[in-house]
Length: 240
Image (cartoon, rainbow, N blue to C red; front, side):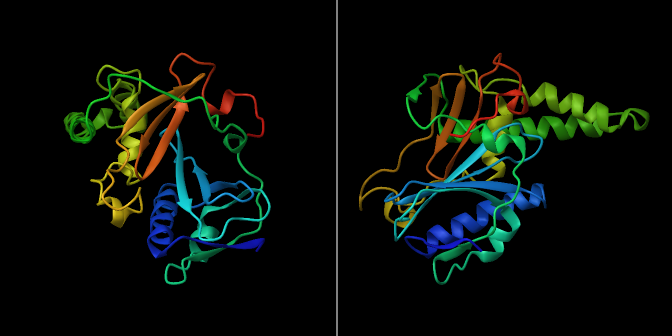
């Protein structure tokens, strides 16, 4: 173990554990990259659920800022096992050799909001309709055509469609829904967002350079903009 982190409260620890649990559900060997600035009050956790081709970002409030910058890639499963929800803390596991995506994080600043994003209810409805369409088309396949390649083709067709009047592919929204980022917002006090009585940040679509980011009160989904240079694995690997 490389250190100890204390979260602002048990709710922060529980939300982090839930996020890690979903990543491990999709990939038992999942890795996450952790970042925290010296003196800062938040830990950023980056993960990449397989098949979605996006990055998932969960920010966790810290009770005690780190004294030195933290930037390490660790096993998501080991970090999950280290989270103590009752004590609102975790031990940081030993570093691992991260996959290529860990060196291709989105920019920290210069994000601007883009128009055209539907409201949260419409976004959830779009995901539900797309999931239902995939299941219906899969069930309609003749037995001889019910292959992995044919199912992948149907999935690519559905999830590459864009959401509303935006350029955001539905696969990014599906990832947000699957990771629990699009669930109905709790009260500002209960969710730890803002001051008592304040409204939580809305769901928003942001852009910075060649990146898009779907921001929600529970986390963000980031991806290269469609038509950019390759996918995540084709980008130049660099520290962020």
